[in-house]
Image 1 (tube, one colour):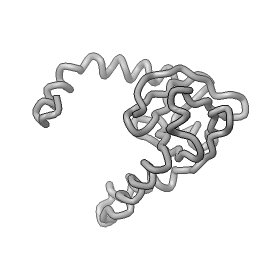
Image 2 (spheres, one colour):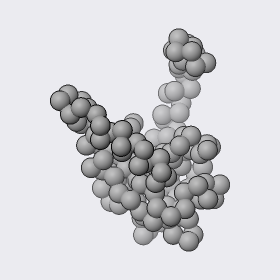
Image 3 (cartoon, rainbow, N blue to C red):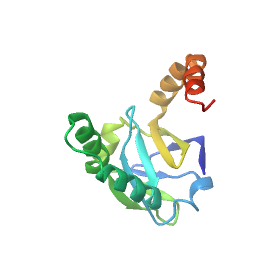
Image 4 (tube, rainbow, N blue to C red):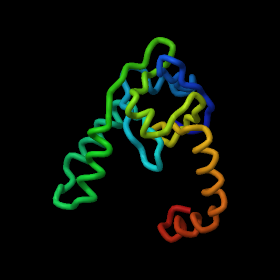
Length: 144
């Protein structure tokens, strides 16, 4: 399970060192793609294959569905995790997420999210102000 929040840096060669806690689960290849809320998603290959399969079965008649499929699949790249646990972040994905040098890598159960550090802090403050409303909505769904 991928959980936790870690501060990391992207080096001058556009490589991001994955948190050591996650490296055994993410060894080999991973998929990096555009995420939601202007972050990047990093998926273990087995999780990506399952998600891509589901996306591939969605009906393409609705504009919003097509857009989401394009966002996730066309923006995806499979990358090798090197021996030091680093992955290369392509320029187009760095630009999409507005990543600078300092980033936050957040474990979100079955994927990682990579955020610009300032954007993550801003997002977190906004969400933390709404925890009661979020918990209420989750309660209605029987989750919390």
